[in-house]
Figure 1 (cartoon, rainbow, N blue to C red):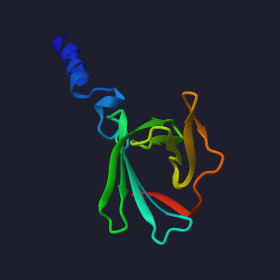
Figure 2 (cartoon, one colour):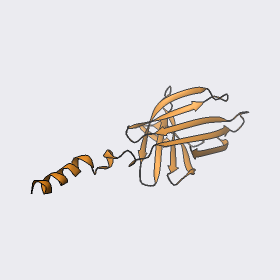
Figure 3 (spheres, rainbow, N blue to C red):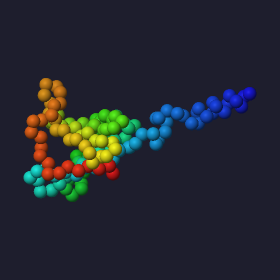
Figure 4 (cartoon, rainbow, N blue to C red):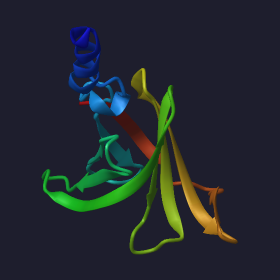
Length: 138
């Protein structure tokens, strides 16, 4: 009789069922992008590291010699099909970029340049022109 009660009770404690309990339940995303602004001679790189255990992601921008230029914490939203990263330029809080990635194919993404107007971020009329902007999951 006691064995019938103890074994299921042990199973509950040894094998938790919540998604937070399993380390393989949520993915850590590491996204690298390379881009070139129209008129610049060299391309630049940036990287996003998203760990769902934390409420912010890491943003890293590299110089052309691959040294870290900027490192910052950014907000993100995750849905079943996409990840939306919000990077607001830290020294000038009126401008920023929203990166919207397709979780099934990180080469498919949308980049939206925004500026703050009347307390809300809206898409700019004339965003920065890029020769190319390529992203991938690393």
